[in-house]
Image (cartoon, rainbow, N blue to C red):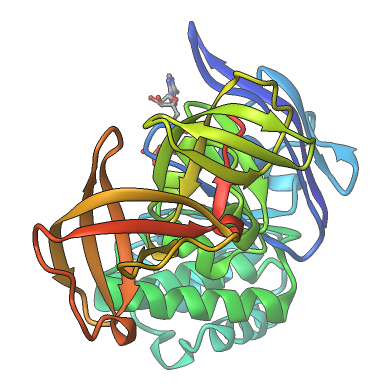
Length: 360
Ligand code: ATP
């Protein structure tokens, strides 16, 4: 089932929790709502489920406005962060519960519940109560309970929030495989950018009740539109600059230290306009002494190595650059046979294609 969020807003008294949220999700896709605490992710999820009403705008399921459709008739199913399993019921009874409410005959309900438990590899624990399950198993039981009613939209509120890192990553992979197999349109709330990158077809990045950016995970990672997105999804060095020349496709910008850089233009760019250039730490490298920057390198920044730490597969450096402060550089360990020394003077460069002009 396709989902469209059509200029949705939500006000709690004077407080604007959501402002003009607008995007569409094709059938069968997995969307994550990603943003810091309090940005409105759960509110939007609850509006889709029908537990909370929007102040403005519409939620469309397969093109139909569902404003007047109560939650239990929306064909959505929700998995809550704390799983909300009934503690006195067995796993099987928990999964059968939604079918019982729908008056499905007991034998058929049992068969369907067992199939659902099989999907999440939990049939062997069907007779246990939730307190006898690990966090990951409870999560699977909650997922089985949601999927058993064959929902058209699966809604997940921080589904892996209570799990430790390894289990979390394992469950992310399991959920994604299951979601692709079942083909259910899914909306998942998370504040974890790695999780969003790992499981999504689309990501809606939210901040202060606004949609900062919507797109495929890699598109958002490679071409963030704002400083917020460029630093919330992965790390970025953000350089202040001013547009000096523009031919509509390329801009020559004057960086805040008076040097110049060349970047692909994004959005409208008028001469003299302030802008910002985002560069990932992994896109930076040092120019060897005596070597000139190539044409496809955007800038040369003179700096001094302030700190270095080997993280296993990469070496992370902080480089102090006048005007810009500390810039982050990440080098693959394979390219770091000759480690940079503390206090060493280096010239940082990055390829033009790795520099992103932020739009706001
Ligand atoms: P978290 O990751 O911490 O769960 P979130 O992004 O899901 O955060 P929401 O729960 O959607 O955020 O809340 C968004 C904002 O709306 C918050 O500032 C919250 O305090 C406020 N809010 C949520 N529900 C209500 C309510 N019933 N009445 C008033 N304000 C509310």
